[in-house]
View 1 (spheres, rainbow, N blue to C red):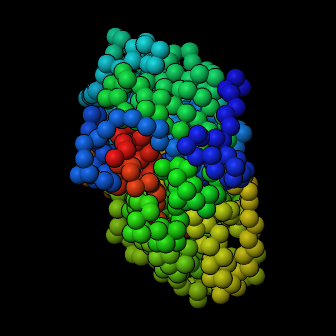
View 2 (cartoon, one colour):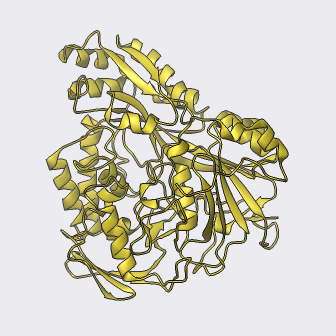
Length: 532
Protein backbone atom coordinates (compact mmCIF):
# COMPACT_ATOMS: atom_id res chain seq x y z
CA UNK A 1 0.00 0.00 0.00
CA UNK A 2 1.03 3.58 -0.56
CA UNK A 3 -0.47 4.90 2.66
CA UNK A 4 1.96 6.31 5.23
CA UNK A 5 2.47 4.64 8.58
CA UNK A 6 1.23 7.04 11.21
CA UNK A 7 2.48 6.75 14.79
CA UNK A 8 -0.02 6.59 17.62
CA UNK A 9 0.84 9.99 18.94
CA UNK A 10 -0.97 13.22 19.47
CA UNK A 11 0.81 16.27 20.84
CA UNK A 12 -2.13 16.87 23.15
CA UNK A 13 -1.98 13.33 24.51
CA UNK A 14 1.61 12.05 24.86
CA UNK A 15 0.35 9.30 27.13
CA UNK A 16 -1.44 7.70 24.20
CA UNK A 17 1.81 6.80 22.54
CA UNK A 18 3.49 5.81 25.79
CA UNK A 19 0.80 3.36 26.79
CA UNK A 20 0.37 2.11 23.25
CA UNK A 21 -3.03 0.59 23.87
CA UNK A 22 -4.28 1.44 20.41
CA UNK A 23 -1.62 -0.68 18.78
CA UNK A 24 -2.87 -3.84 20.49
CA UNK A 25 -3.98 -6.48 18.02
CA UNK A 26 -7.19 -8.41 18.05
CA UNK A 27 -10.81 -7.39 17.80
CA UNK A 28 -13.43 -7.02 15.17
CA UNK A 29 -16.90 -5.59 15.55
CA UNK A 30 -19.32 -7.37 13.25
CA UNK A 31 -21.76 -5.41 11.48
CA UNK A 32 -24.74 -6.89 10.20
CA UNK A 33 -26.14 -4.13 8.50
CA UNK A 34 -27.01 -0.73 10.30
CA UNK A 35 -29.34 2.31 9.60
CA UNK A 36 -29.63 6.16 9.46
CA UNK A 37 -31.99 9.04 10.30
CA UNK A 38 -32.85 12.43 8.90
CA UNK A 39 -33.59 13.81 5.45
CA UNK A 40 -30.98 15.57 3.40
CA UNK A 41 -30.00 18.83 4.96
CA UNK A 42 -31.35 18.07 8.42
CA UNK A 43 -29.32 17.63 11.55
CA UNK A 44 -29.60 14.54 13.73
CA UNK A 45 -32.74 14.50 15.79
CA UNK A 46 -32.46 14.02 19.51
CA UNK A 47 -28.75 14.80 19.49
CA UNK A 48 -26.89 14.67 22.77
CA UNK A 49 -26.28 18.14 24.13
CA UNK A 50 -29.00 19.90 22.19
CA UNK A 51 -29.73 23.32 23.63
CA UNK A 52 -26.15 23.74 24.83
CA UNK A 53 -25.33 26.56 22.46
CA UNK A 54 -24.92 27.18 18.74
CA UNK A 55 -22.71 24.69 16.88
CA UNK A 56 -19.18 25.96 16.47
CA UNK A 57 -16.49 25.07 13.98
CA UNK A 58 -13.05 23.67 14.66
CA UNK A 59 -11.10 20.91 16.33
CA UNK A 60 -10.17 17.30 15.66
CA UNK A 61 -12.42 14.61 17.04
CA UNK A 62 -10.69 11.32 17.80
CA UNK A 63 -13.06 8.37 17.58
CA UNK A 64 -12.09 4.92 18.87
CA UNK A 65 -13.51 1.84 17.14
CA UNK A 66 -12.68 -1.84 17.12
CA UNK A 67 -10.88 -2.57 13.86
CA UNK A 68 -9.90 -5.32 11.49
CA UNK A 69 -6.12 -5.40 11.71
CA UNK A 70 -3.59 -4.85 8.96
CA UNK A 71 -6.04 -6.02 6.29
CA UNK A 72 -8.25 -2.97 6.72
CA UNK A 73 -9.16 -1.06 3.59
CA UNK A 74 -10.91 2.18 2.70
CA UNK A 75 -12.68 0.50 -0.23
CA UNK A 76 -16.29 1.37 0.68
CA UNK A 77 -17.65 -1.62 -1.21
CA UNK A 78 -15.72 -3.96 1.07
CA UNK A 79 -16.95 -2.38 4.31
CA UNK A 80 -17.91 -5.11 6.75
CA UNK A 81 -17.12 -3.75 10.20
CA UNK A 82 -18.54 -0.79 12.09
CA UNK A 83 -15.18 0.96 11.74
CA UNK A 84 -15.28 0.38 7.98
CA UNK A 85 -18.81 1.77 7.77
CA UNK A 86 -17.96 4.88 9.79
CA UNK A 87 -14.90 5.64 7.65
CA UNK A 88 -16.85 5.01 4.44
CA UNK A 89 -19.63 7.34 5.59
CA UNK A 90 -17.10 10.11 6.19
CA UNK A 91 -15.56 9.83 2.71
CA UNK A 92 -18.42 8.69 0.48
CA UNK A 93 -22.17 8.98 -0.08
CA UNK A 94 -24.93 6.58 -1.07
CA UNK A 95 -27.97 7.43 -3.16
CA UNK A 96 -30.14 6.90 -0.08
CA UNK A 97 -29.79 5.84 3.54
CA UNK A 98 -32.02 4.60 6.33
CA UNK A 99 -33.78 6.93 8.73
CA UNK A 100 -34.38 6.12 12.38
CA UNK A 101 -37.65 4.48 11.34
CA UNK A 102 -35.71 2.39 8.80
CA UNK A 103 -37.34 4.03 5.81
CA UNK A 104 -35.13 5.09 2.90
CA UNK A 105 -34.19 8.77 2.88
CA UNK A 106 -32.68 10.64 -0.11
CA UNK A 107 -28.96 11.39 -0.06
CA UNK A 108 -27.16 11.76 -3.43
CA UNK A 109 -30.52 10.95 -4.98
CA UNK A 110 -32.71 14.04 -4.91
CA UNK A 111 -35.76 12.03 -5.97
CA UNK A 112 -36.91 8.64 -7.27
CA UNK A 113 -39.96 7.71 -9.27
CA UNK A 114 -41.28 4.26 -10.22
CA UNK A 115 -42.74 3.33 -13.56
CA UNK A 116 -46.25 1.93 -13.75
CA UNK A 117 -45.01 -1.66 -13.62
CA UNK A 118 -42.51 -1.18 -10.73
CA UNK A 119 -39.80 -2.63 -12.98
CA UNK A 120 -38.27 0.71 -13.99
CA UNK A 121 -37.26 3.48 -11.59
CA UNK A 122 -35.97 6.91 -12.52
CA UNK A 123 -33.49 8.41 -10.03
CA UNK A 124 -32.55 12.10 -10.20
CA UNK A 125 -29.23 13.11 -8.66
CA UNK A 126 -28.70 16.26 -6.65
CA UNK A 127 -25.85 18.60 -7.55
CA UNK A 128 -22.79 17.23 -5.76
CA UNK A 129 -19.09 17.04 -6.51
CA UNK A 130 -16.31 14.61 -5.70
CA UNK A 131 -13.33 15.76 -3.67
CA UNK A 132 -11.33 16.37 -6.87
CA UNK A 133 -13.98 18.77 -8.18
CA UNK A 134 -15.66 16.46 -10.69
CA UNK A 135 -19.46 16.39 -10.56
CA UNK A 136 -21.21 13.23 -9.40
CA UNK A 137 -22.94 11.88 -12.50
CA UNK A 138 -25.24 9.09 -13.58
CA UNK A 139 -22.24 7.30 -15.11
CA UNK A 140 -20.50 7.28 -11.72
CA UNK A 141 -23.59 5.68 -10.22
CA UNK A 142 -23.73 2.97 -12.86
CA UNK A 143 -19.99 2.31 -12.58
CA UNK A 144 -20.26 1.96 -8.79
CA UNK A 145 -23.17 -0.47 -8.94
CA UNK A 146 -21.59 -2.53 -11.72
CA UNK A 147 -18.38 -2.78 -9.73
CA UNK A 148 -20.32 -4.03 -6.68
CA UNK A 149 -22.13 -6.58 -8.86
CA UNK A 150 -18.89 -7.97 -10.35
CA UNK A 151 -19.37 -11.77 -10.23
CA UNK A 152 -15.70 -12.22 -9.46
CA UNK A 153 -15.78 -10.11 -6.30
CA UNK A 154 -17.50 -10.52 -2.92
CA UNK A 155 -18.70 -6.99 -2.29
CA UNK A 156 -21.13 -6.58 0.60
CA UNK A 157 -24.01 -4.95 -1.29
CA UNK A 158 -24.00 -7.43 -4.18
CA UNK A 159 -27.04 -9.39 -2.99
CA UNK A 160 -28.96 -6.18 -2.31
CA UNK A 161 -28.34 -4.91 -5.86
CA UNK A 162 -29.38 -8.23 -7.41
CA UNK A 163 -32.84 -6.94 -8.53
CA UNK A 164 -31.19 -4.46 -10.92
CA UNK A 165 -30.50 -5.36 -14.54
CA UNK A 166 -27.36 -3.28 -14.73
CA UNK A 167 -26.69 -4.12 -18.37
CA UNK A 168 -30.03 -2.58 -19.35
CA UNK A 169 -29.91 0.36 -16.92
CA UNK A 170 -28.69 3.62 -18.44
CA UNK A 171 -27.92 7.27 -17.92
CA UNK A 172 -30.69 9.40 -19.42
CA UNK A 173 -28.61 12.53 -18.85
CA UNK A 174 -25.72 13.46 -16.52
CA UNK A 175 -28.03 13.64 -13.49
CA UNK A 176 -30.68 11.04 -14.28
CA UNK A 177 -30.39 7.26 -14.05
CA UNK A 178 -33.01 4.85 -15.34
CA UNK A 179 -32.73 1.61 -13.43
CA UNK A 180 -34.22 -1.37 -15.23
CA UNK A 181 -35.13 -4.15 -12.82
CA UNK A 182 -35.29 -7.89 -13.35
CA UNK A 183 -38.74 -7.96 -11.79
CA UNK A 184 -41.16 -5.49 -10.24
CA UNK A 185 -39.71 -4.19 -6.97
CA UNK A 186 -41.95 -2.12 -4.75
CA UNK A 187 -39.26 -1.30 -2.19
CA UNK A 188 -36.53 -0.31 -4.61
CA UNK A 189 -35.43 2.70 -2.47
CA UNK A 190 -34.16 0.15 0.07
CA UNK A 191 -31.76 -1.05 -2.64
CA UNK A 192 -30.39 2.47 -3.00
CA UNK A 193 -29.85 2.61 0.77
CA UNK A 194 -28.21 -0.84 0.98
CA UNK A 195 -25.28 -1.26 3.30
CA UNK A 196 -22.10 -0.75 1.31
CA UNK A 197 -23.76 0.68 -1.83
CA UNK A 198 -21.52 3.76 -1.96
CA UNK A 199 -21.00 5.88 -5.06
CA UNK A 200 -17.39 6.22 -6.22
CA UNK A 201 -15.91 8.02 -9.24
CA UNK A 202 -16.04 6.16 -12.53
CA UNK A 203 -12.92 4.00 -12.93
CA UNK A 204 -11.87 4.20 -9.26
CA UNK A 205 -10.03 1.11 -8.00
CA UNK A 206 -7.33 2.28 -5.55
CA UNK A 207 -8.97 3.34 -2.30
CA UNK A 208 -6.08 3.01 0.14
CA UNK A 209 -3.64 5.41 -1.53
CA UNK A 210 -5.75 8.56 -1.87
CA UNK A 211 -9.46 7.74 -2.10
CA UNK A 212 -11.79 10.28 -3.67
CA UNK A 213 -15.42 10.39 -2.61
CA UNK A 214 -18.21 12.95 -2.36
CA UNK A 215 -18.61 12.71 1.42
CA UNK A 216 -18.28 15.34 4.16
CA UNK A 217 -14.58 14.69 4.79
CA UNK A 218 -11.52 14.44 2.52
CA UNK A 219 -8.74 11.92 2.86
CA UNK A 220 -5.54 12.90 4.72
CA UNK A 221 -3.87 9.63 5.78
CA UNK A 222 -4.52 5.96 6.50
CA UNK A 223 -2.54 3.33 8.39
CA UNK A 224 -4.51 0.04 8.27
CA UNK A 225 -5.35 -1.32 11.69
CA UNK A 226 -4.17 1.86 13.37
CA UNK A 227 -5.50 5.23 12.25
CA UNK A 228 -7.26 7.21 9.53
CA UNK A 229 -7.38 11.01 9.39
CA UNK A 230 -9.90 12.95 7.29
CA UNK A 231 -10.33 16.72 6.87
CA UNK A 232 -13.47 18.83 6.43
CA UNK A 233 -14.86 19.06 2.90
CA UNK A 234 -15.83 22.70 2.53
CA UNK A 235 -17.79 21.93 -0.64
CA UNK A 236 -19.99 19.19 0.78
CA UNK A 237 -23.49 19.31 -0.70
CA UNK A 238 -25.13 18.85 2.72
CA UNK A 239 -23.10 21.62 4.36
CA UNK A 240 -19.50 21.59 5.51
CA UNK A 241 -18.83 19.69 8.78
CA UNK A 242 -18.30 21.65 11.97
CA UNK A 243 -15.11 19.73 12.80
CA UNK A 244 -11.80 20.53 11.13
CA UNK A 245 -10.79 16.88 11.19
CA UNK A 246 -11.89 13.48 12.39
CA UNK A 247 -9.41 10.75 13.28
CA UNK A 248 -10.49 7.12 13.50
CA UNK A 249 -8.22 5.20 15.86
CA UNK A 250 -8.29 1.47 16.47
CA UNK A 251 -8.82 0.21 20.01
CA UNK A 252 -9.98 -3.37 19.86
CA UNK A 253 -10.57 -3.88 23.56
CA UNK A 254 -13.59 -2.21 25.09
CA UNK A 255 -11.51 -1.42 28.18
CA UNK A 256 -9.02 0.42 25.99
CA UNK A 257 -11.76 2.53 24.44
CA UNK A 258 -13.29 3.62 27.74
CA UNK A 259 -9.87 4.25 29.31
CA UNK A 260 -8.86 6.39 26.35
CA UNK A 261 -12.07 8.36 26.70
CA UNK A 262 -11.59 8.85 30.44
CA UNK A 263 -7.95 9.81 29.89
CA UNK A 264 -8.73 12.43 27.25
CA UNK A 265 -6.98 10.54 24.47
CA UNK A 266 -10.17 10.19 22.42
CA UNK A 267 -13.48 12.06 22.48
CA UNK A 268 -15.74 9.31 21.12
CA UNK A 269 -15.74 5.64 22.14
CA UNK A 270 -17.81 3.30 20.02
CA UNK A 271 -19.54 0.24 21.45
CA UNK A 272 -19.32 0.20 25.23
CA UNK A 273 -20.72 -2.73 27.16
CA UNK A 274 -23.69 -2.36 29.53
CA UNK A 275 -21.63 -2.78 32.69
CA UNK A 276 -19.25 0.00 31.63
CA UNK A 277 -22.12 2.32 30.80
CA UNK A 278 -23.77 1.68 34.16
CA UNK A 279 -20.51 2.39 35.98
CA UNK A 280 -20.00 5.79 34.33
CA UNK A 281 -23.47 7.06 33.48
CA UNK A 282 -24.40 10.21 35.34
CA UNK A 283 -21.00 10.53 37.02
CA UNK A 284 -20.03 13.64 35.08
CA UNK A 285 -16.86 12.30 33.48
CA UNK A 286 -18.32 11.16 30.15
CA UNK A 287 -21.63 11.25 28.31
CA UNK A 288 -23.34 7.92 27.67
CA UNK A 289 -25.56 7.72 24.58
CA UNK A 290 -27.92 4.72 24.35
CA UNK A 291 -29.37 3.76 21.01
CA UNK A 292 -32.25 1.61 22.23
CA UNK A 293 -32.69 -1.97 21.02
CA UNK A 294 -30.39 -1.48 18.06
CA UNK A 295 -28.70 -4.86 17.88
CA UNK A 296 -30.13 -8.33 17.32
CA UNK A 297 -28.36 -10.86 19.56
CA UNK A 298 -28.57 -14.49 18.48
CA UNK A 299 -27.00 -17.85 17.88
CA UNK A 300 -26.73 -18.93 14.24
CA UNK A 301 -27.31 -22.58 13.39
CA UNK A 302 -26.04 -23.75 10.00
CA UNK A 303 -29.03 -25.45 8.44
CA UNK A 304 -27.10 -27.24 5.68
CA UNK A 305 -25.08 -29.62 7.90
CA UNK A 306 -25.55 -31.95 10.86
CA UNK A 307 -26.96 -31.65 13.41
CA UNK A 308 -28.88 -28.56 12.32
CA UNK A 309 -29.95 -29.90 8.94
CA UNK A 310 -32.72 -31.57 10.96
CA UNK A 311 -35.42 -29.01 11.72
CA UNK A 312 -36.38 -30.90 14.88
CA UNK A 313 -32.94 -30.19 16.31
CA UNK A 314 -33.28 -26.50 15.44
CA UNK A 315 -36.67 -26.33 17.14
CA UNK A 316 -35.24 -28.09 20.18
CA UNK A 317 -32.55 -25.41 20.43
CA UNK A 318 -35.21 -22.69 20.21
CA UNK A 319 -36.94 -24.33 23.18
CA UNK A 320 -33.77 -24.74 25.27
CA UNK A 321 -33.19 -21.01 25.50
CA UNK A 322 -34.33 -18.95 28.47
CA UNK A 323 -34.29 -15.58 26.76
CA UNK A 324 -34.88 -13.52 29.90
CA UNK A 325 -31.89 -15.14 31.59
CA UNK A 326 -29.77 -14.43 28.52
CA UNK A 327 -30.76 -10.76 28.39
CA UNK A 328 -30.31 -10.29 32.13
CA UNK A 329 -27.00 -12.14 32.26
CA UNK A 330 -25.30 -11.21 28.99
CA UNK A 331 -26.70 -7.69 28.53
CA UNK A 332 -27.03 -6.70 32.19
CA UNK A 333 -30.78 -6.47 31.65
CA UNK A 334 -30.49 -3.57 29.17
CA UNK A 335 -32.44 -4.81 26.20
CA UNK A 336 -35.51 -6.74 25.14
CA UNK A 337 -36.05 -10.46 24.74
CA UNK A 338 -36.20 -11.83 21.20
CA UNK A 339 -38.55 -14.27 19.52
CA UNK A 340 -36.27 -15.92 16.93
CA UNK A 341 -37.00 -13.24 14.34
CA UNK A 342 -35.03 -10.21 13.24
CA UNK A 343 -36.39 -6.66 13.43
CA UNK A 344 -38.52 -6.41 16.55
CA UNK A 345 -40.58 -3.23 16.26
CA UNK A 346 -39.68 -2.63 12.60
CA UNK A 347 -42.08 -2.39 9.71
CA UNK A 348 -43.47 -5.82 8.71
CA UNK A 349 -42.29 -7.51 11.94
CA UNK A 350 -44.54 -10.48 12.77
CA UNK A 351 -45.52 -9.31 16.25
CA UNK A 352 -48.54 -11.61 16.38
CA UNK A 353 -46.49 -14.78 16.77
CA UNK A 354 -46.53 -16.12 20.34
CA UNK A 355 -43.48 -15.36 22.45
CA UNK A 356 -41.43 -18.52 22.58
CA UNK A 357 -40.65 -19.74 26.09
CA UNK A 358 -38.20 -22.30 27.39
CA UNK A 359 -39.71 -25.82 27.24
CA UNK A 360 -37.10 -28.41 28.17
CA UNK A 361 -39.49 -31.38 28.04
CA UNK A 362 -40.52 -30.57 24.48
CA UNK A 363 -36.87 -29.95 23.53
CA UNK A 364 -35.88 -33.39 24.87
CA UNK A 365 -38.75 -35.04 22.98
CA UNK A 366 -37.69 -33.43 19.71
CA UNK A 367 -34.11 -34.55 20.20
CA UNK A 368 -35.28 -38.12 20.82
CA UNK A 369 -37.31 -38.02 17.61
CA UNK A 370 -34.23 -36.80 15.75
CA UNK A 371 -31.98 -39.49 17.28
CA UNK A 372 -29.90 -36.81 18.99
CA UNK A 373 -30.49 -37.50 22.68
CA UNK A 374 -26.84 -37.20 23.74
CA UNK A 375 -25.96 -34.46 21.30
CA UNK A 376 -22.62 -32.67 21.51
CA UNK A 377 -22.10 -29.43 19.61
CA UNK A 378 -19.38 -26.80 19.45
CA UNK A 379 -20.45 -23.20 19.92
CA UNK A 380 -18.07 -20.71 18.32
CA UNK A 381 -17.89 -17.39 20.10
CA UNK A 382 -15.46 -14.56 20.74
CA UNK A 383 -15.06 -11.44 22.88
CA UNK A 384 -15.44 -9.59 19.58
CA UNK A 385 -18.80 -8.20 20.74
CA UNK A 386 -20.35 -7.29 24.07
CA UNK A 387 -22.23 -10.18 25.62
CA UNK A 388 -21.03 -12.90 23.25
CA UNK A 389 -18.95 -14.96 25.64
CA UNK A 390 -21.35 -14.40 28.52
CA UNK A 391 -24.33 -15.54 26.43
CA UNK A 392 -22.40 -18.59 25.25
CA UNK A 393 -21.74 -19.70 28.84
CA UNK A 394 -25.35 -19.11 29.88
CA UNK A 395 -26.71 -21.05 26.91
CA UNK A 396 -24.28 -23.90 27.56
CA UNK A 397 -25.82 -24.32 31.00
CA UNK A 398 -29.34 -24.04 29.63
CA UNK A 399 -28.68 -26.69 26.98
CA UNK A 400 -27.22 -29.05 29.59
CA UNK A 401 -30.67 -29.19 31.23
CA UNK A 402 -31.96 -30.72 27.98
CA UNK A 403 -29.14 -33.25 27.88
CA UNK A 404 -27.10 -31.39 25.24
CA UNK A 405 -23.38 -30.85 25.72
CA UNK A 406 -22.25 -27.49 24.35
CA UNK A 407 -18.49 -27.06 24.05
CA UNK A 408 -17.45 -23.44 23.74
CA UNK A 409 -14.69 -22.55 21.29
CA UNK A 410 -13.42 -18.99 21.64
CA UNK A 411 -12.09 -17.48 18.42
CA UNK A 412 -9.84 -14.52 17.77
CA UNK A 413 -11.28 -11.06 17.28
CA UNK A 414 -9.52 -10.21 14.04
CA UNK A 415 -10.84 -13.19 12.07
CA UNK A 416 -14.03 -14.20 13.89
CA UNK A 417 -16.55 -12.85 11.39
CA UNK A 418 -14.70 -14.40 8.44
CA UNK A 419 -14.21 -17.71 10.25
CA UNK A 420 -17.81 -18.29 11.28
CA UNK A 421 -19.42 -17.35 7.97
CA UNK A 422 -18.74 -20.74 6.38
CA UNK A 423 -17.15 -22.92 9.07
CA UNK A 424 -18.57 -24.57 12.18
CA UNK A 425 -22.19 -25.39 12.94
CA UNK A 426 -23.27 -23.04 15.77
CA UNK A 427 -21.96 -19.56 16.56
CA UNK A 428 -22.64 -16.33 18.38
CA UNK A 429 -24.07 -13.76 15.97
CA UNK A 430 -25.45 -10.25 15.98
CA UNK A 431 -26.78 -7.70 13.53
CA UNK A 432 -27.34 -3.98 13.51
CA UNK A 433 -30.58 -2.41 12.38
CA UNK A 434 -31.83 -2.61 8.82
CA UNK A 435 -35.23 -3.08 7.17
CA UNK A 436 -36.57 -6.62 7.43
CA UNK A 437 -36.53 -6.73 3.64
CA UNK A 438 -32.79 -5.97 3.65
CA UNK A 439 -32.10 -8.58 6.33
CA UNK A 440 -33.79 -11.17 4.13
CA UNK A 441 -31.98 -10.14 0.96
CA UNK A 442 -28.55 -9.99 2.60
CA UNK A 443 -28.76 -13.03 4.89
CA UNK A 444 -31.51 -15.45 3.92
CA UNK A 445 -31.59 -15.85 0.15
CA UNK A 446 -29.74 -18.59 -1.70
CA UNK A 447 -27.41 -16.02 -3.28
CA UNK A 448 -26.86 -13.87 -0.16
CA UNK A 449 -23.15 -13.30 0.45
CA UNK A 450 -23.52 -13.14 4.26
CA UNK A 451 -25.83 -16.12 4.72
CA UNK A 452 -24.45 -17.30 8.08
CA UNK A 453 -27.21 -19.89 8.65
CA UNK A 454 -26.87 -21.34 5.13
CA UNK A 455 -30.62 -20.98 4.68
CA UNK A 456 -30.98 -22.04 1.04
CA UNK A 457 -34.57 -22.54 -0.11
CA UNK A 458 -35.76 -21.72 -3.61
CA UNK A 459 -39.38 -21.44 -2.50
CA UNK A 460 -38.35 -18.94 0.18
CA UNK A 461 -36.45 -16.96 -2.51
CA UNK A 462 -39.65 -16.97 -4.58
CA UNK A 463 -41.68 -15.56 -1.68
CA UNK A 464 -39.19 -12.73 -1.34
CA UNK A 465 -39.56 -11.94 -5.05
CA UNK A 466 -43.34 -12.05 -4.65
CA UNK A 467 -43.20 -9.57 -1.78
CA UNK A 468 -40.99 -7.26 -3.79
CA UNK A 469 -43.34 -7.29 -6.76
CA UNK A 470 -46.48 -6.60 -4.71
CA UNK A 471 -47.54 -2.96 -5.00
CA UNK A 472 -50.24 -3.06 -2.31
CA UNK A 473 -48.56 -2.64 1.06
CA UNK A 474 -51.03 -4.78 3.02
CA UNK A 475 -50.65 -7.63 0.59
CA UNK A 476 -46.88 -7.26 0.73
CA UNK A 477 -47.00 -7.38 4.53
CA UNK A 478 -48.94 -10.63 4.33
CA UNK A 479 -46.16 -12.23 2.27
CA UNK A 480 -43.50 -11.06 4.74
CA UNK A 481 -45.62 -12.49 7.57
CA UNK A 482 -45.72 -15.85 5.80
CA UNK A 483 -41.93 -15.84 5.41
CA UNK A 484 -41.43 -14.98 9.08
CA UNK A 485 -43.78 -17.74 10.21
CA UNK A 486 -41.55 -20.20 8.41
CA UNK A 487 -38.38 -18.76 9.94
CA UNK A 488 -40.02 -18.84 13.36
CA UNK A 489 -40.82 -22.53 12.91
CA UNK A 490 -37.64 -23.80 11.29
CA UNK A 491 -35.11 -21.02 10.64
CA UNK A 492 -31.48 -20.96 11.70
CA UNK A 493 -31.37 -17.81 13.86
CA UNK A 494 -32.06 -18.32 17.56
CA UNK A 495 -32.74 -14.65 18.33
CA UNK A 496 -32.64 -14.32 22.10
CA UNK A 497 -32.48 -10.56 22.53
CA UNK A 498 -32.16 -7.01 21.23
CA UNK A 499 -29.45 -4.92 22.86
CA UNK A 500 -28.99 -1.19 23.28
CA UNK A 501 -26.09 0.24 21.31
CA UNK A 502 -23.93 2.26 23.69
CA UNK A 503 -21.56 5.09 22.82
CA UNK A 504 -19.45 7.21 25.14
CA UNK A 505 -18.33 10.75 24.40
CA UNK A 506 -16.34 13.47 26.11
CA UNK A 507 -18.44 16.05 27.93
CA UNK A 508 -17.65 18.74 25.35
CA UNK A 509 -18.93 16.74 22.39
CA UNK A 510 -22.29 17.77 20.95
CA UNK A 511 -24.45 16.57 18.06
CA UNK A 512 -24.19 12.80 18.58
CA UNK A 513 -27.61 11.46 17.59
CA UNK A 514 -29.44 9.60 20.34
CA UNK A 515 -32.19 8.20 18.12
CA UNK A 516 -30.17 6.58 15.35
CA UNK A 517 -29.73 2.80 15.37
CA UNK A 518 -26.28 1.55 14.49
CA UNK A 519 -25.60 1.72 10.74
CA UNK A 520 -28.32 4.26 10.13
CA UNK A 521 -27.79 7.69 8.58
CA UNK A 522 -27.14 9.61 11.78
CA UNK A 523 -25.12 6.87 13.48
CA UNK A 524 -21.42 7.84 13.43
CA UNK A 525 -22.32 10.95 11.45
CA UNK A 526 -19.38 13.12 12.35
CA UNK A 527 -20.21 15.95 9.97
CA UNK A 528 -22.96 16.99 12.41
CA UNK A 529 -20.80 16.78 15.55
CA UNK A 530 -19.10 19.73 17.22
CA UNK A 531 -17.28 20.78 20.39
CA UNK A 532 -19.04 22.98 22.93
